[in-house]
Image (cartoon, rainbow, N blue to C red; front, side):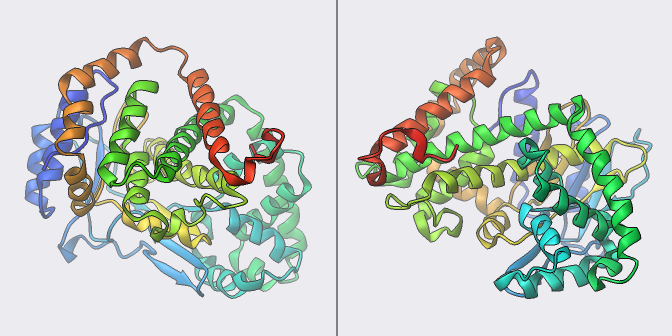
Length: 431
């Protein structure tokens, strides 16, 4: 079963062979995984791997795993299970410690602010309170990076500041925050100091670099989602294969790169249309289509950037070398999508700016069946791969190109929407 390769660096062919070896395993057995790791030891030098295995001896009982809070809140382990084999090179000197960092969606951070202000949360009230109760003993594991990245332009916003203060109070003392105990005044004072430091950090070069990277991921997601919507609305394209071919052709020609995760998400849309809950808002007659695409693109960007952040953390001596990603969300549609993409393997590589993500075999087979043979011949041949690699190497203006292509596909989508037929200009589009 071939898998779509990601080819943008000098080790592309070696990486493809390694990922193919892992993908070929029907069941992850510790002995087989160790054999593949040894076979590719040069590429995996100083790397660390996390693999789901069907063996209770490798259970990680300290992981919170999956939890539902009422009917609106969800905590999800982004690995497919909690029976995890941890691997590192024999020269690795890190302890085999694992952790469960929890990335919180923007809804949860906002809810913390509302809760502190004693505002009701409507349908989310029950789920939020249940989440606070469960997370109180492990509140130190939570982080608000998605909220910070998505709202980086609102540093002077009082609402943002209050939400961050509330979130910091919960992190510092989950039980006191949850019960609104008299110690709130001291708790708030300390939290205000934390938030002031956070806001100053967000003005610094390190955060600006992170935000720039996240915006880059956001634009990739926005472009793919918008182009997918255009293809989905084209009634002349009747099959998933036709639409997927056109999407790959667009990415190959316009940008010289094929981001697998975003393509897999688009495949879900082509195959299921609005039956995939994540794409419910993508309708020709939707009055807030552009706002929805914007929010969906940030969702996908947060998913991808989270792994990059974890890779950085995994190499800090003060952190556990094997962070197991978890996500807390009050967005049911996005949660349902991420469940499809839960990983059976994750490698934190050394000296590179990405992690290796290994999706379920069923997902790979499903997409591979649609890609073969036409898409493979056109976009995954050695000639096509070499063409993209050469263009990627010589292209020094990718950021500007992403902005231009995002504007191009947005304009094309605007032209076909009934709600914009009589519009005087792009002011209707919330960008």
